[in-house]
Length: 93
Image 1: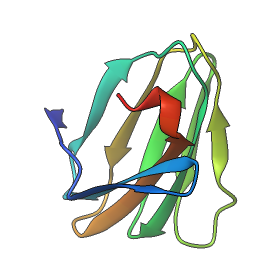
Image 2: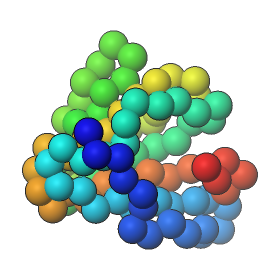
Image 3: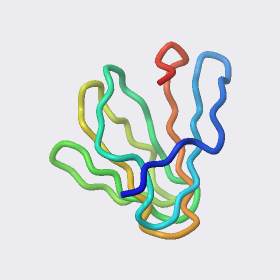
């Protein structure tokens, strides 16, 4: 999978927002953090793989929480996919 950097990365109040634009096969390779964060899909489709689960998201899907110290990866499965990660500002990584 081709690893991405965010197209938009900004603070809002006490949160950090990271927006990714991806084509099929692009995303965030398997990794983990010492903090939780939420992710959701704004356009297209992506799959979130995490310990014991594989969840397909689109713009109608409920955001999901990725827990601290839980490996996960996010991969676009359609060209033109836009997904977003939201985390507390103190966890800006």
